[in-house]
Length: 107
Image 1 (tube, helix red, strand yellow):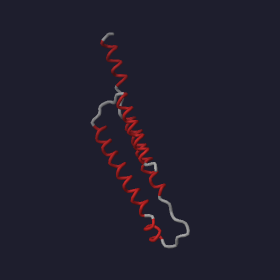
Image 2: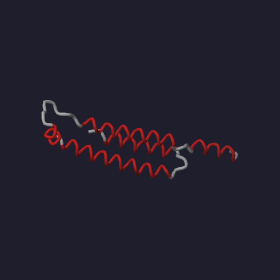
Image 3: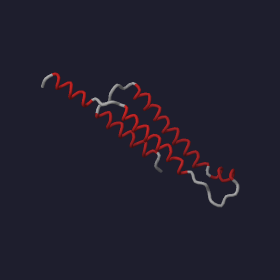
Image 4: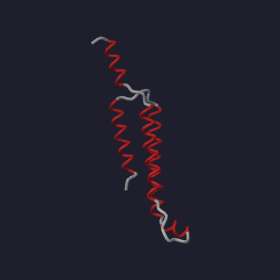
């Protein structure tokens, strides 16, 4: 194989990171948004403060989950900032990470 062919093959395997970052940011955004769905307004409650206090486990779960997803997002952002390109293996590993993030927000 000629050197030109080798470089062309290498270029195909080295993908830009912009699409990976956009997809990942979308997953983080959706996961963070879906956390709020778990918090429901109790029916038949006339005292808002009492209703909020009764649901403290839901709010605590939201805060812990949001902080976890936020920490993973920050680390992901810092790592991808240093990348010039992404290999197919890195893309696959990123998909596994996104699967874990998506699963972390599920009860």
